[in-house]
Amino acid sequence: MCNDSSFMKIAINEAKISLMEGGIPIGAVLVKNNKIISKGHNKLIQNGSVILHAEMDAIENAGRLSGEDYKEITLFTTLSPCPMCSGAILLYNISRVVIGENKSLMGAEDLLRENGVKVDVLNILECRDLLLNYIKNNQLQWDSELEKVGNSTNIF
Image: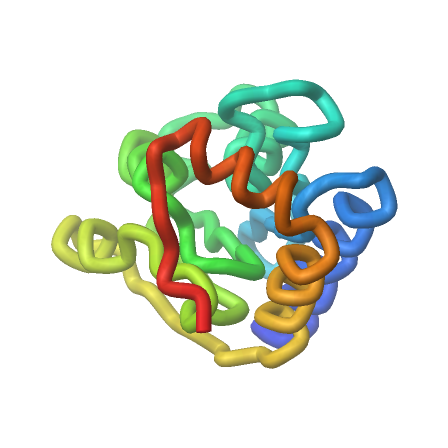
Protein backbone atom coordinates (compact mmCIF):
# COMPACT_ATOMS: atom_id res chain seq x y z
CA MET A 1 0.00 0.00 0.00
CA CYS A 2 1.38 3.40 -0.98
CA ASN A 3 1.23 6.42 1.28
CA ASP A 4 1.08 10.14 0.56
CA SER A 5 4.86 10.42 0.38
CA SER A 6 5.06 7.67 -2.25
CA PHE A 7 2.51 9.35 -4.50
CA MET A 8 4.16 12.74 -3.96
CA LYS A 9 7.46 11.27 -5.16
CA ILE A 10 5.72 10.39 -8.41
CA ALA A 11 4.37 13.96 -8.68
CA ILE A 12 7.91 15.25 -8.07
CA ASN A 13 9.15 13.01 -10.86
CA GLU A 14 6.53 14.56 -13.14
CA ALA A 15 7.84 18.01 -12.15
CA LYS A 16 11.35 16.88 -13.10
CA ILE A 17 10.06 15.65 -16.47
CA SER A 18 8.62 19.11 -17.11
CA LEU A 19 11.96 20.66 -16.20
CA MET A 20 13.83 18.28 -18.55
CA GLU A 21 11.43 19.34 -21.32
CA GLY A 22 12.27 22.99 -20.68
CA GLY A 23 9.11 23.69 -18.69
CA ILE A 24 8.16 24.86 -15.24
CA PRO A 25 8.79 22.05 -12.71
CA ILE A 26 5.35 21.29 -11.34
CA GLY A 27 3.87 17.80 -11.29
CA ALA A 28 0.59 16.14 -10.34
CA VAL A 29 -0.89 12.67 -9.90
CA LEU A 30 -4.50 11.51 -9.57
CA VAL A 31 -5.02 8.53 -7.26
CA LYS A 32 -8.10 6.44 -6.54
CA ASN A 33 -8.08 3.56 -4.04
CA ASN A 34 -4.28 3.62 -3.86
CA LYS A 35 -4.00 3.26 -7.64
CA ILE A 36 -2.62 5.91 -9.99
CA ILE A 37 -5.31 7.01 -12.44
CA SER A 38 -3.15 9.52 -14.29
CA LYS A 39 -0.09 11.75 -14.09
CA GLY A 40 0.65 15.16 -15.51
CA HIS A 41 3.09 18.03 -15.48
CA ASN A 42 3.15 21.68 -16.37
CA LYS A 43 3.24 22.12 -20.15
CA LEU A 44 2.69 25.86 -20.54
CA ILE A 45 6.02 26.42 -22.24
CA GLN A 46 6.43 23.08 -24.01
CA ASN A 47 2.99 23.21 -25.65
CA GLY A 48 2.58 26.98 -25.83
CA SER A 49 -0.51 26.39 -23.69
CA VAL A 50 -2.38 28.85 -21.54
CA ILE A 51 -4.05 26.22 -19.32
CA LEU A 52 -1.89 23.10 -19.09
CA HIS A 53 -0.85 23.40 -15.50
CA ALA A 54 0.19 20.08 -13.94
CA GLU A 55 -3.18 19.59 -12.28
CA MET A 56 -5.08 20.30 -15.50
CA ASP A 57 -2.78 17.95 -17.43
CA ALA A 58 -3.38 15.14 -14.92
CA ILE A 59 -7.15 15.68 -15.07
CA GLU A 60 -7.05 15.68 -18.88
CA ASN A 61 -4.88 12.56 -18.95
CA ALA A 62 -7.39 10.72 -16.74
CA GLY A 63 -9.94 10.78 -19.55
CA ARG A 64 -13.66 10.92 -18.98
CA LEU A 65 -14.34 9.50 -15.54
CA SER A 66 -17.68 9.22 -13.80
CA GLY A 67 -18.73 11.71 -11.17
CA GLU A 68 -18.53 8.94 -8.58
CA ASP A 69 -14.93 8.22 -9.59
CA TYR A 70 -13.90 11.84 -9.09
CA LYS A 71 -15.39 11.88 -5.59
CA GLU A 72 -12.96 9.12 -4.60
CA ILE A 73 -9.88 10.71 -6.16
CA THR A 74 -7.00 12.38 -4.38
CA LEU A 75 -4.94 14.89 -6.36
CA PHE A 76 -1.26 15.07 -5.45
CA THR A 77 0.44 18.25 -6.65
CA THR A 78 3.91 19.55 -5.97
CA LEU A 79 2.70 23.13 -5.43
CA SER A 80 -0.44 24.82 -4.16
CA PRO A 81 -3.14 24.80 -6.90
CA CYS A 82 -3.90 28.14 -8.55
CA PRO A 83 -7.50 29.44 -8.79
CA MET A 84 -7.97 27.85 -12.24
CA CYS A 85 -6.83 24.41 -11.07
CA SER A 86 -8.79 24.77 -7.84
CA GLY A 87 -11.87 25.53 -9.93
CA ALA A 88 -11.35 22.30 -11.87
CA ILE A 89 -10.91 20.40 -8.60
CA LEU A 90 -14.25 21.79 -7.42
CA LEU A 91 -15.95 21.24 -10.78
CA TYR A 92 -15.04 17.55 -10.75
CA ASN A 93 -15.71 17.12 -7.01
CA ILE A 94 -12.23 15.86 -6.23
CA SER A 95 -12.44 15.28 -2.50
CA ARG A 96 -8.83 15.58 -1.37
CA VAL A 97 -5.72 17.49 -2.45
CA VAL A 98 -2.23 16.75 -1.13
CA ILE A 99 0.24 19.59 -1.72
CA GLY A 100 4.00 19.15 -1.73
CA GLU A 101 4.59 22.66 -0.44
CA ASN A 102 2.84 26.02 -0.36
CA LYS A 103 5.46 28.50 0.82
CA SER A 104 6.87 29.45 -2.59
CA LEU A 105 3.43 29.87 -4.16
CA MET A 106 0.11 30.03 -2.32
CA GLY A 107 -2.82 29.02 -4.44
CA ALA A 108 -6.54 28.94 -3.72
CA GLU A 109 -6.40 26.52 -0.79
CA ASP A 110 -8.98 28.50 1.18
CA LEU A 111 -11.43 28.17 -1.72
CA LEU A 112 -10.92 24.40 -1.71
CA ARG A 113 -11.38 24.11 2.05
CA GLU A 114 -14.46 26.37 2.02
CA ASN A 115 -16.01 23.97 -0.48
CA GLY A 116 -15.36 20.81 1.52
CA VAL A 117 -12.13 19.62 -0.08
CA LYS A 118 -9.68 18.08 2.37
CA VAL A 119 -6.31 19.80 1.87
CA ASP A 120 -3.08 18.39 3.28
CA VAL A 121 0.31 20.10 2.93
CA LEU A 122 3.42 17.94 3.25
CA ASN A 123 6.02 20.77 3.31
CA ILE A 124 8.53 18.93 1.14
CA LEU A 125 11.58 21.11 0.52
CA GLU A 126 12.38 19.42 -2.79
CA CYS A 127 9.13 20.77 -4.26
CA ARG A 128 10.04 24.29 -3.20
CA ASP A 129 13.66 23.95 -4.34
CA LEU A 130 12.62 22.73 -7.81
CA LEU A 131 10.56 25.87 -8.36
CA LEU A 132 12.96 28.34 -6.77
CA ASN A 133 15.92 26.96 -8.73
CA TYR A 134 13.87 27.15 -11.91
CA ILE A 135 13.02 30.78 -11.23
CA LYS A 136 16.63 31.62 -10.37
CA ASN A 137 17.86 30.06 -13.62
CA ASN A 138 14.97 31.24 -15.82
CA GLN A 139 13.97 34.61 -14.38
CA LEU A 140 12.99 36.17 -17.72
CA GLN A 141 10.80 33.19 -18.66
CA TRP A 142 9.21 33.18 -15.20
CA ASP A 143 8.52 36.91 -15.33
CA SER A 144 6.99 36.45 -18.77
CA GLU A 145 4.67 33.72 -17.48
CA LEU A 146 3.58 35.88 -14.55
CA GLU A 147 2.97 38.83 -16.84
CA LYS A 148 0.68 36.72 -19.03
CA VAL A 149 -1.65 36.10 -16.10
CA GLY A 150 -1.23 39.53 -14.52
CA ASN A 151 0.00 37.88 -11.36
CA SER A 152 2.61 38.41 -8.71
CA THR A 153 3.83 35.88 -6.17
CA ASN A 154 5.03 35.73 -2.62
CA ILE A 155 8.27 33.95 -3.40
CA PHE A 156 10.71 33.99 -0.52
